[in-house]
Structure formats: structure tokens, C-alpha cells
Figure 1 (cartoon, rainbow, N blue to C red):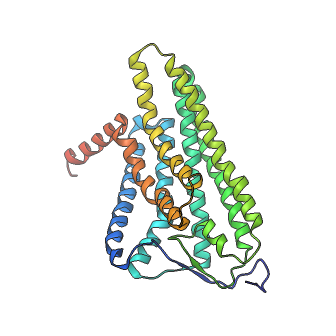
Figure 2: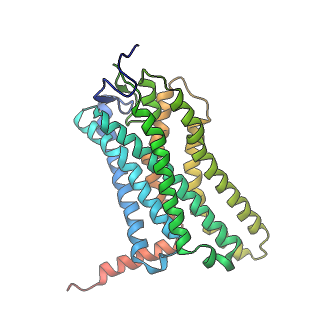
Length: 317
């Protein structure tokens, strides 16, 4: 297909999102299912943020990072799920060109922000277990803020690195996206311009933003495991493992999804595989993370009991 427009122009004013590969008679069931999961995501992550905000005992580096992780999970789900639900309810498949580009930008931003926040939390665990006597000094308030601000800044630049070159591509006639949101890979398949630069950025910057944090997480856990194995107290070992348990569960789910999407062999229909793993990113993981951190976390459970007690037994003014 030939395009007569310049590379920084497009004939496409809107895209069509095919949505989930489900039968029309199943739309209602899946709509209720995904609406319930999205509302659970909102409630669970907002509750985590609220508890950390209200309870002074949770004003520590670990919960500071956790509150930002909860906010990020809330956002990454909100970038894609509401539009999917609206399309399922109304039967509309359209999304404007600007809306599509914006959705892609914010999805990349918040999905990768999760990655860097999990890395900061891994470093916090490393310091807490391997250097407990220096924890207060090493994990200062200034460093925590710097790590979060740095994560936001890096992802701002990373998202622009993929978004700006995409806006220079031409989309001539085909505007149907075989996905339920504007995924970068799906958009590149529709372009009639040369996408070699975009692919190069994916395989360099995109891979680096995953591999470097993952390496840091692995190194942190290797050091943590080495320290735990040197402990003589069974109680100390159990406490250390309990401290790492929730974070390790979230890390395993996050990177397990990435490994499954990019390293497992593709089936005959790669679009379905991409949609399934994208659902893990945007719906399942953000919903499960609050439960992973609350069900096995005594501090979070105690904070919840305090809030419920105040609500149940406080006298009306």
C-alpha cells in the first residue's frame, strides 16, 4: 500500500478497536465480569492508599513505595478498562486518533512505572534485611522521594521515546486494531510507513527498561537470600521471608507475564496471546496486588482494623 502523504501526516482520524475475541452472546457476561474486576481494582488500591495515608505506623519507606504502586496499578487499569467496558456496553468500536495515541502513551508510562517501583521496593527490602542497623540512614526520606521522582521522570522520557516517533508514521487506509486498546505493536502493524526506527527503539530502549530493573531485583534477592542463609535464628529467617513474601509474589506475577508474552512460543493466533497477556497487565495484576499485600501483611491488616473500629464505634457529632 502506497501513501502519498508525508511521514508526519495521517489519513486516519479514528481507529476501530475489535475488542475481546468473544461471541456476541457472551458480551453481557464478560461485561459484568470485567466491570466487577475493575471496581475491585479501584476499591482495593484506593483502600491501600487510604490506609497508608491515615495510619502513622505505615509512614515508612516500604509503604511509601507501596502507596505509589497502588496508585500506578489503579492508573494502568483505568487507562484501558473503562474504554473497553464502554465499547462492550454501547457496541461502539471507535476511538479517535488523538485518543488512541494518548491511551498508548499512558499505558506504556504506567505499565513500566510499576516495573521501576518494584525495583525500588526490592532495594528497600535489601537494605532492611542486609543492613538493618543502617536502614534509617540509607533509606532516608530524601532518597525515597528521589527514587519515586526518578521513576516518574524516566518513564516520562521512555513513553515519549515510543510515542513521538509513532506520531510521525502514516496510517493510510487500514484502521482496525485487533486488540481492546491501542497497543504499540498493534498500531505499528497498521502503519504504511517505514517502522524500522520504532522497532529499533522497542528492542533497545524498551528492552532496557525491563532488563535493567529486573537485574537489580534479582541482585537484591540474591543478596537477601545470602543474608537469610547466614541467620542462625529460625525466628529471624521466618520474619525475613515474611517481609519478602508479598513483594516476591507481585514481582513473580509481573515478570511472569512479561516472560510469558515475549519468550514463550507464539500460537497460531498471536493476537489472542497478546490480548490474554495484556489482560494480565491491565486487569488481573492490578486487581490482585492489593490482596497480595494485605492478606499476608500484618501492618496493613492492623491499619484496616483501626479504620473499621473508628467507623463503627465513633459517635456522631
